[in-house]
Length: 58
Image (cartoon, rainbow, N blue to C red; front, side):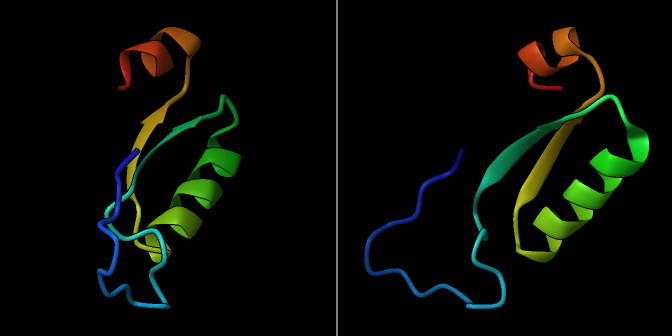
């Protein structure tokens, strides 16, 4: 996951700006909902639908 430098100004509407998050779920609709929510909060999303893909970070 990303890190934020201390003292940096963050948009309160996008508290996850600069973070990279892995979403791993085999239920497509759940994964998409999670991804959309995290994206709206500013995160960069990496998604995976299987354990091997998640382990690779794909």
